[in-house]
Length: 105
Length: 260
Image (cartoon, rainbow over all chains, first blue to last red; front, top):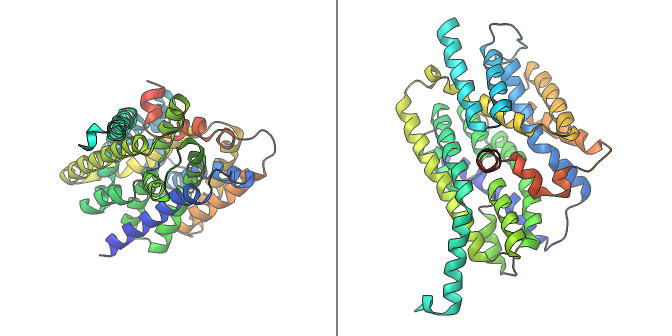
């Protein structure tokens, strides 16, 4: 029940961001400063969530060779830049992690 | 009888053309939906929740982060604040869509808003360049098929994920991190993006090491986005032309249609 309500609340929050300008703005433009702020948010969110998972998986900074999250990030990033494809980046990251566990775990 | 009237025939054709325009979105949504479904059940969310989110929320990045936060057992407030932040960009699309649509009642606008995503926005904007102002049935067809493909992909993924057993064996517990890395790599162009990502990364890492928890990432994102607005110089392409810039952001359309 809790999960259901949480999903409903997520849906409500999401819907508000989609409908408010469409219903209320009638063609007026958002302020420039707000646009500049919004332009940064997607990349900011990604960096803010990804970097601690990679560099501090246990909650403390770890840049050693035992940090599998960091090691697997290397082929993942390489494939993402090479193929320019999200799916292949995910496949490379997951495969690298499975392989590293097999070899080192 | 209704199909015989010119109004009805036009409506049917508009819906079909909208559905046809959804094909590139479908090609992106099905595989990403499968990945999301597998990730969701790997994170410990029951399959009905994973699929239900695709039906009710229909926002890829918010759902991906959402299932990992739910799996980590964060408070509902953290979950909702994160969802809001991840979806703020819809404000941009929603306001940019207004001049592309024919005049229609608010109830119809409210309907179309429900399925507004990066991808459906990009396709609608492109269609408007070609066709002029878009009708309700056209956009409803485009959006409806797009969401159906997302739900279908999620369902396949959730069911497949339930069969996998131990997700760590296949490295699937790392798939969400990998997806963040991939999305970041595809979006890091332009000075504002680099600065925002750099500030967010360092602030978030510092807060994580200090043990702040999931709020750290939110605070870091806000701080970095504010820092981004202070940058002088050229306007961001997203500010000047949301459709062109967001074609780079999205998960499916670019990977399939633009680069392949």
